[in-house]
Image 1: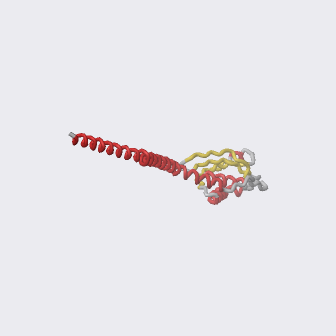
Image 2: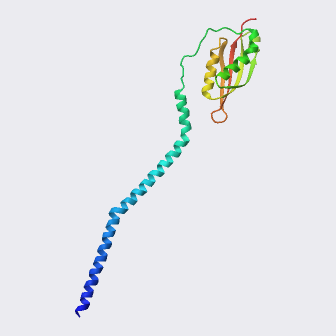
Image 3: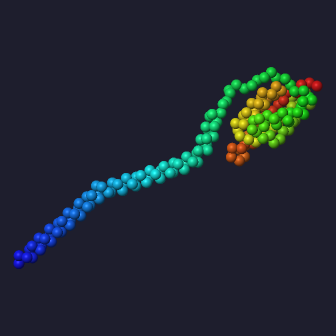
Length: 182
């Protein structure tokens, strides 16, 4: 009868060793591997967040470049004010060519210009010119400054700016040009 007791002791000792080994393996998993898994999941979440921010930045990049370009553009706060002289009657026909030359130098496309002679015929001493252009907004600014530098420029009556495609704007400016006596 002594033998069955030894087998029970060996069985319980073996069971104790197996359970102890399982506990050690569980402890190693709990201390070593599970924190690493949590850290890997945290890194994955950070990477996903970075990818989302990168996509957002890709969409905002053109806007940032345009803002940088605008910030680097040199703007003179002083507008040109030359001595003003009215244009002669025989020079009115050359206004279209002059406005077109200014448009090309300012990177603006002048699509049409219309001269209204009614104010001059009414004896007011000026004519109204309506200019239709397309281009970038800062190029319009340069064009308007160039027009203001003309010696016969009198005033801006009206400016209308509409967005067409992307950065292309459509601008209609109505200006006054001083006209001298015949």
